[in-house]
Length: 160
Image 1 (cartoon, rainbow, N blue to C red):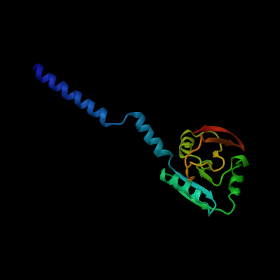
Image 2: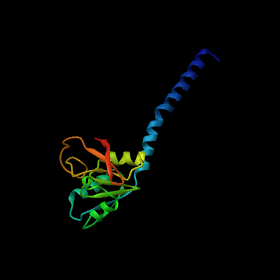
Image 3: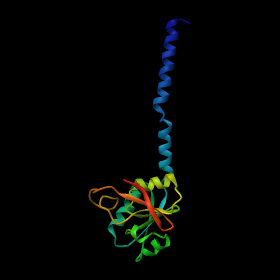
Image 4: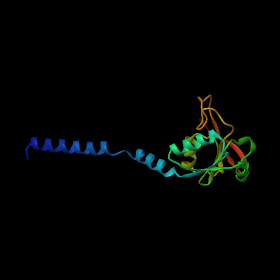
């Protein structure tokens, strides 16, 4: 073969190899997609029938890909008692996802982290109804401290 044919062949092969690497996502991108797909699942939110912010939270979960079933209750405290959620950690609604509870307006990023990491806890909570959280209108005023709860005992899970 002449040098010219060898150079053209090598050039075409190089372009082919580059095209393969450019067109396929790297392994970390593939992992991110499969984790996001894996954690989307059914959730059940227990709420007051008249609470607008609870509807907003359910809507935020749905927009993130969760299949949401809302259950209206006149006394949501029954669910909170069932999951042993301490009084200091309670909010207006309780969501159950898999083996965990999610108390209050916990940012969706924290819910995804919980489902991705599967820690040995009962659930997570964001006490009260902080402005700027999913379902609560307004701008975020400061960091959100999300707590983990196990057997009624709580400690910091993460800050956002």
